[in-house]
Length: 208
Image (tube, rainbow, N blue to C red):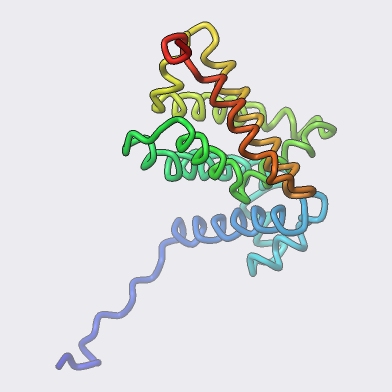
């Protein structure tokens, strides 16, 4: 049995590790606050309370609330891409039919994180500073989701000249469902909308 006196004391975290841990708490708290109380009510006070970090602690790492929100938006984008392929990838790898693939895409779109993304985008519509700061994040997210979608055979088979439009059309429909269902669900229309999207992705060869 090891003598407690000889036990190795726990390693003290470096300043960098402490900083990263605090930033992580603040980002997670920002995402959770926007998800649960909305963008407008995700105040510095609300975020600090959830993170267990003082106001001074927040502003040691972020000059403004806007800086924190933009960092949180970048993290939401990364998580959405990861969640998308976690939901869709296994279905694609099992060579499931188009309808099953679309159901997986729909499930990924209905992640609570997507509502956080919408909250931030809606705020950016009337907040010039937020919209300007988010532009690189939005461009990067659009490119990443498109490249990820190309891993789906039915999407990769689309004509090059219309492929990107076809991807965005389907994703925007599922995004719209997610937003609308958060307020007024209409599950009786889900299957009908899925048929419309499936028809969109039919290639000339599969229509014959």
